[in-house]
Image 1: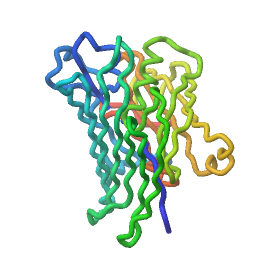
Image 2 (image 1 turned 180 degrees about the vertical axis):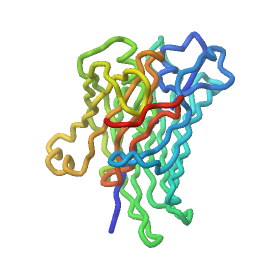
Image 3 (image 1 turned 180 degrees about the horizontal axis):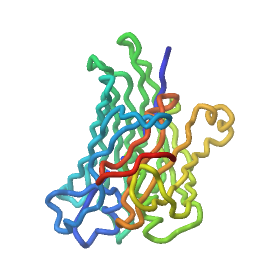
Image 4 (image 1 turned 30 degrees about the horizontal axis):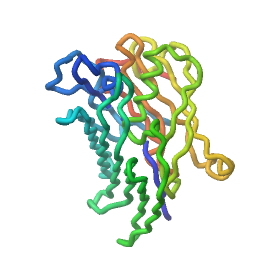
Length: 268
């Protein structure tokens, strides 16, 4: 039976001059001049229904010579599946958020064969969503218009954390690239909650509920989309500490939890 696409993260530091923008990825660069901690580079992957450990994902951020950034992640699941993601971001302009330039996410089966790939070039507009079945590639391609506030994969945390740092309580709005299963750029609104306990992290967290708008396709696509939620820690410079989503469109639900100090794990 065919599976389909999408993704559902990070940690970073840049130099003090661009702290506000680049730190939003919550991944720390080891050679940063602003080497305070910005969050966990490793997340546990749990089943949202049972809290069972089903994998782990590690994020790494590198600063490029031109001031841009490369974000890479590697996820390994207990069933043998693996994911690799690589994103490129331009250097932030005038203290704003870095603009995403490219997105690439590959999904592999336990035997190492490709299951699917999602790719987008935000500059040229070229995007492809590919699913492999029995070694045959089913490719969906499109030339899209990517607004400057479009993000995909790990960098999605940028507009969310940026709004939290700026104390924005109104719905956060930006654009998101996804495969459903063909390539699409959709509007996203994110509602910020109030500080509350979350069983996986000590202390209060702030939940952000994320809702995409597929326009007239909402009635067709919405039933196959799980809740997408992110949790941030206001006591630690708004680190990203958790994300609940699907591994890809119509794929298994996953819950990523920052691999921090000991946490309480009793009930939601």
